[in-house]
Structure formats: structure tokens, C-alpha cells
Image (tube, rainbow, N blue to C red; front, side, top):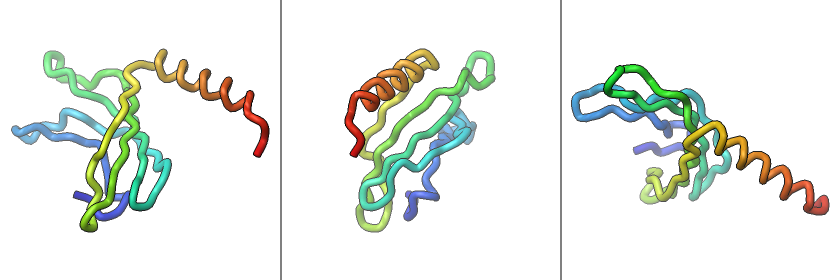
Length: 99
């Protein structure tokens, strides 16, 4: 496990040592005892042995005994869903008075 937020990544290798989830990018949304990171990643299609279209996952970590452990996550499974989330957030924040 990682001791710093910068060390965390979303790559995943199966039991045979094959990379089946590849991190393309990451954005640290918050740091501290609780950290939130947004990852851009691709899953391997085992039938074609090619990586699928990119997806996004937002992962929440908690630091305990000096290491970060995953607490929860939310996957944005398609470009359409991601764009819809962006549109809703823009609409909601445009309605909010400036702080």
C-alpha cells in the first residue's frame, strides 16, 4: 500500500502478471487523512487482448497506520454519463450565489 497520495495508482495486474487495468491519468482532488483521486483508465478486453475505451473512477482513500486504503469508489462508465455529470454540476453551481 502507498504511504503518500502521489504513490497511489489504478493499474491492476491479474494473478498471471498481466496488466488488465491501465491508468492513463490521475487528478488528486483532495489530500490528507482522507484523500480523493479521479483516475482515467482502460480495462483490457480479454477476448481481443486490446484495451477498451477510457473510463473514469473517483476513489476515496483513508490513511490508517501510515498507509492509504481504498474506502469507496464511483465509476463513470461512459463518455455520455461523464458529460451528463458535468452538465448537471455546471447547472447546479451556476444557480449558487458566489461565496
